Image (cartoon, rainbow, N blue to C red; front, side, top):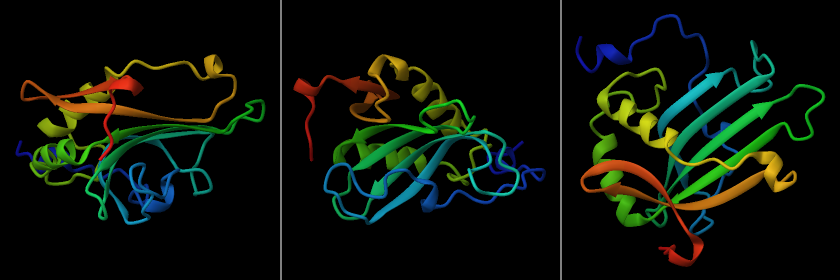
Length: 172
């Protein structure tokens, strides 16, 4: 099976991922609204308000800023069960301009970067990398609905996402 064939899924009737699905419509680094989703790592369920939505929806997407060149990963969890206080919870991970250049080179290897069902090598690597990021339970932050973190993307020529402590973080 070729890399292109590994991305095909004829049974998916969901709409393509669009910028309106993003919880944050501006760049973490420069606050520009010139951002664009460039790689969909994970998407589960149907977006709230669209036909076929059933209580939960989630996505993990890499977004690039056309203004400053930095990027961000948005991780969104939606659960509209009536008893939940917060339906939408977000984590964003800031990617420096330098790391974004390196990550973009890797992303270019995928034929369908906005197809979350793709099974190419780069999609598999990014899913593994995002799964390794330690998570803080939402209950532990007393109802806070969104958080921003800084991450390192590449280490020893391997794609990893590693949270950087605030005092060690650098902004571009």
